[in-house]
Image 1: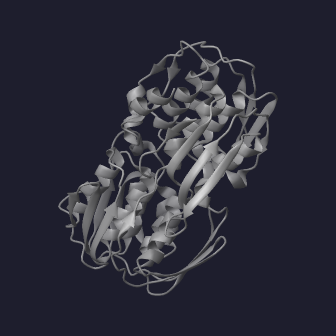
Image 2: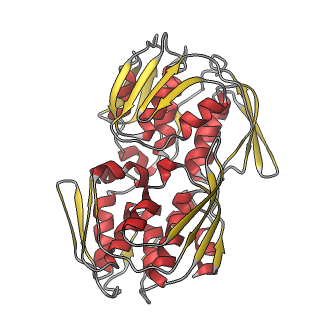
Image 3: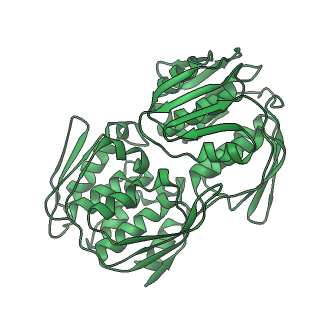
Length: 409
């Protein structure tokens, strides 16, 4: 049995920093992830007049309250983080000053029209550049509204942040249930929020700073879980977030025959604990669109697992992957081709023909996408000689990935 503890959760870290900045009082964020995306978040907060300091493994954020942020001297740089850009848009929509959000690298090619259109339903004035960054946000009087069919956790979170400034309650109904880190943190900080399944109701009002410990990132653990299953090894993942909105990948693997046991240790504000991966024999399966939001970051890994399972696996509802750090549909197909696996994409669905053994047909092009690099790493444990180009792109979300992976595999 091998033991592994993943790095802190990136999604939870970014949300905790933004909400702490808008809260009244000083918040201690324990065990935050330190990577390019979270450093970009801190840089944006500094530009908004939010002070922070580091104390051991914690970041202490001096909140300025909903109305205490200051006008930045220039554009807010979200780096390469789509989550940061979209959540910042929600926060900035409620301010009394204009702002601009930009970014770098692949983020400049990622769609921003959906978040601008969603915020407009609250009365926000958000302009894109032909659907892309930069976002130009002008002061506006936000209003309460009912918004249905939200299918993105990032857009939902942007709406909730803007909703704190609205003139009345907002109600959001999700198309599919997505990760709920923002709702949990809002509840922790005293927001008047009620969640009932896919329905969320938020009343505007102030937040109170509260300490928060970031759990381990199950998305960062996913390559290790996949590698253990492929290599036929037992693995125990400790100190890991077990948010139900993030368990789609483990649920999918269990459907394919994986023996995975969850052991929750805490429930609020974030469920966390450990999970154990046992020796398993994977089989092909079919996955519907409703399950994709809970494993949106792990689809390339699921594709690798499916490639090692006898039969044909279908993963439907993955069209949103075409607008990630890379066109993740195309890059996943290219990865599978490098392993000698036949796969195709049509009408929003991936179809993967499982093989008995991977073959290093060609080097893996990561397309500068950390999720593709991690999926290739998992495949490499049963594909000797597999070359992975630009493996350093994993630093975006997991700077120590290759060190940790080599220790276990």
